[in-house]
Amino acid sequence: MSNDKSSVLEIALTFVIGAAAGYVVGILFAPAGGKKTRHNIQKEINKAGDMVKDNYEKIAKEAQKGIEALSKHLKT
Image 1 (cartoon, helix red, strand yellow):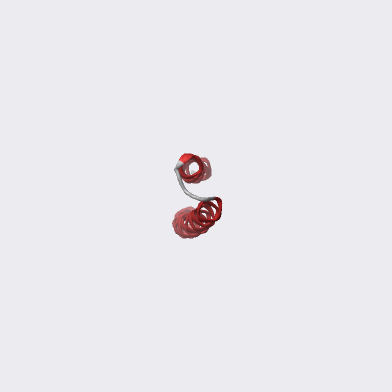
Image 2 (tube, one colour):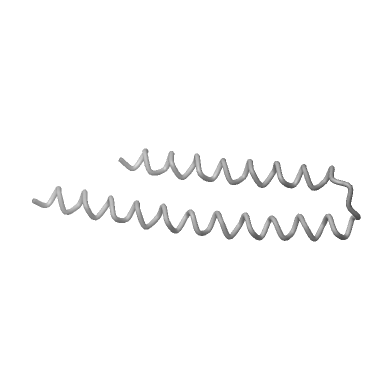
């Protein structure tokens, strides 16, 4: 069960990192000034970081619920 939870986390994290990297590459090739481009990259990095944190917290809560349910089941 623990492996399933970690693989879900790995998949979610990989997706977020891939999406962020794709966005950054797109911004770098878009026709905008350097200052504006750096601002856009920083803004998107912050958004991606927040999204990763939110998803991690959700997954951690679900994992904790699973651990508690399994623990309760094993005690009975």
